[in-house]
Image (cartoon, rainbow, N blue to C red; front, side, top):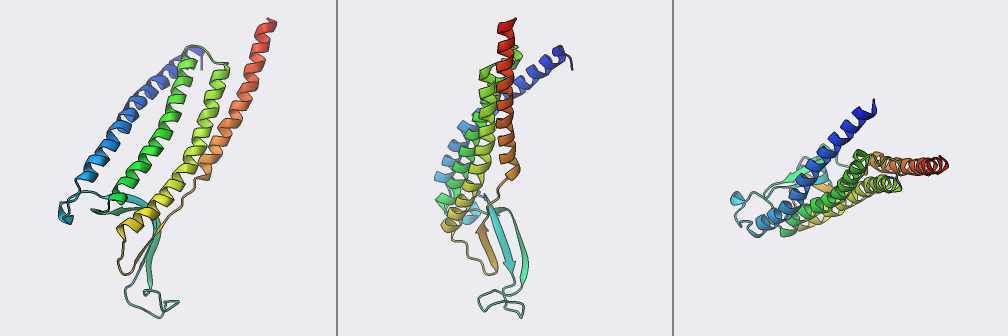
Length: 216
């Protein structure tokens, strides 16, 4: 790839990041207002509500009658289905179960926004021809920390948020068992460490570049 093509691609990525910045900044402002307004106006009648909540849970479905396959008297019959995924809780009335997922989404959005704005500054610098600078090295390192932080904070917030949501709605249906799920993304954390290592390599490259510039 020629230097001209690389610059055009860099500018294109920078413009794309500009669009994402505007979009996610708008979401960061509108989302909490929407959650607050809807939460303050949840109707008391279930058929009038539109407050579905998505929660990451482990679920298990048993038959409601005891069978010979039950391993203990406390089990509710034969296991029919189990798994993990986003469970939709329809028309919740609990205030906490409505506000909590919204708050978690807002926290994760701010972490993502910080990484997005850092990447935007990086590509602005690259578009201006400032490639070998310590500032760019620090920006790449920060992106690595964002990767690690996001993939550590996200499962923790999801787990404890799901736990508090289940306690708030007091879900009690015979044969259906819901438990908070903990889904840790090792690949995301590894990618973050890889980016930090790469920033260290680039730091050495920047130092060598400056030394060569002074020598010339």
